Image (cartoon, rainbow, N blue to C red; front, side, top):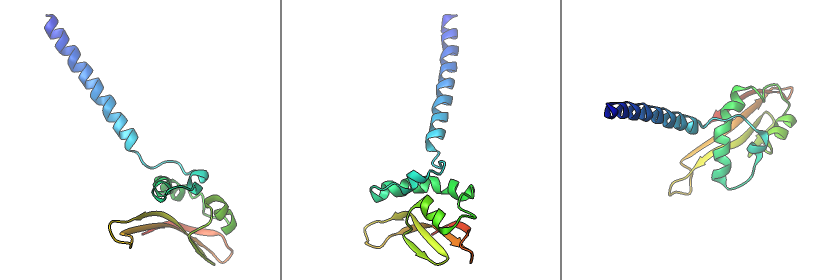
Length: 126
């Protein structure tokens, strides 16, 4: 009788442990995080900076944080862009290299402005 009880308990504990481990993996694998201006502007090694930006850019775009803001307000929020023109700002999100000096992959956050200088579009450009 005690063997059967122990076997049932072991099965229950195993099931609980499996559920906890699965939940922890799901939570830890969630890369998209809430946008934070200070984290976006944070300087450091290129891979560290781009890891942070890649993890928060979706929230920035989906929340429409930038839409309707002036170019000055966007620069205050995101810092100085890598490139800019009258109606467009570009910020580096990710740059991947292999063995060549040319990047294998580049993604940028592109912010477009209307003639009044207000942000109308914010998207990832690959």
